[in-house]
Length: 231
Ligand code: MN
Image (cartoon, rainbow, N blue to C red; front, side):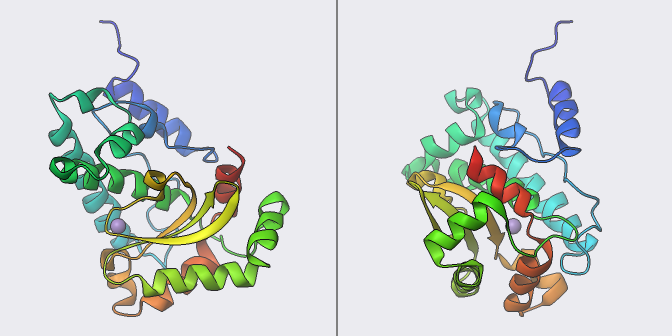
């Protein structure tokens, strides 16, 4: 039997291989059409403990992220969107009244894959090189950028995301509600923090600020952020 290049099996193998190396751009899953698959985590499920415990990963990655993948596949099956990449589905369904469900699930698949890859065990610290220079130029330094990111993440009312983005050559911090993603506003995402309660409630309960501070200081994968900026 001839294997289709985007067959589920090949795709899982490609995903597993990618999981072992540095993330260098959009997730492999984003380049393939449906069925979309849950990409592997780039670290063991207890690697971010105690900021993000294995229990949280079990629900957040194993249940929530997986459910977005499964729901998306059901919603696009048999439609023209079944042949689109994840990013094409997001851009095509954004703002379309009868495609809200498709958009929400597709964007949440993308957002979560991006979120997981933006962190690593023993991350945090400060960026270097070109990324540090751009932060210096557009924010006036790491501290000012960190403060903006913290404020965006802590003041997002209800569910959503805080992002570091490249907006037409200028680095900015933005926040989005629910599943919204800066890609639909022509911005290039560089890093994100999930501030839905499911991201932090098991480990930090109502203390969203503790979770945000810990992610920024201990988990940010600046190599991932720099690679996004460079692509
Ligand atoms: Mn989430």
